[in-house]
Image (cartoon, rainbow, N blue to C red):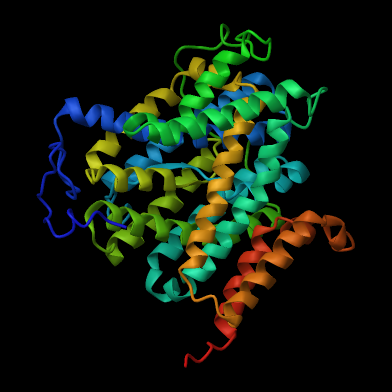
Length: 446
């Protein structure tokens, strides 16, 4: 909800902190703008690096390849954010939206990467980005497919589908010889507890960046226990531009279909994030131009990511919450954060340092982040009328989608590419939610 004291103040109003509350175009003094921009980077950094680290583990990447994927993720996140905040023609919401590597694509990307390799994931993502650009251009025709009930089911399914990934990392990573050892689980629990303490015992920057701070502290604690090493950092360069198409592009049908469906799913998420930004930061609804431009920028960012070896990008909900918390709607503040991300993406040593973070540390953070995704889905579902019709839609969508993910052998008889789509959890859940919502008659209210 927007702060009622800020609603209706007008586009040029300034809060007591002098940072132009509710004004997209206001440029704060640099002494305010730089820390505010860095705060956005801290809020999204943990999520942005977790996805490439998980994919690196799936494909069996070397330490250098893992560092490269992290470097690419930071660079692309910065570029994609600038496309959103600055805009290019009709592309870009021109709002304080932070882009980052999408968790939503992971349940689909992981089985594709296991079966076909990273090139197939990137090829499918390239097509998915173009599909999302088309969806943004025809927003008016598809918006009725995205009520809170459908959006909530999809977001909840994403969060639940990702939780096993977080648990596996908390146990040390599936390839760890001591998987499930006490020191891995203890480290993950330490990160979880520290995050909760920081989140609810402090305010401002510490609270907003609780996950990031907990990862840094967990990483530092890991060294005395022999769980972390900087052995690969010394050989990494100080400056380098990530080479495009390092892993190539491939286009198997399962990757195109799976990632294409996820383009629709992430469009639903982006619509919600754009609405959250304008309502939370300015007390108004997003315009169709802002929403359409934001979705197209999401797609362009995803296609650029595929070319530069990064996974699909999307708007980051944690930064939406940060805008609502601070009331700072300046898109220029977020642009400063984007420049920081671009610079970070040009420093391979930073990627090498991040790549050395133990799986258990990231697992503790991932459990919280993925759980929060699921909780956000529940919150959206709760805004719908939970009558018998809607409960049936929820039950069938989640029952079939998550059930097939839990028991993939149930569809073992099907061709491999079709099986990959069905056991993702997200695709069948999203498909059923959209179709059932469209065909089942609304219940009459007394």
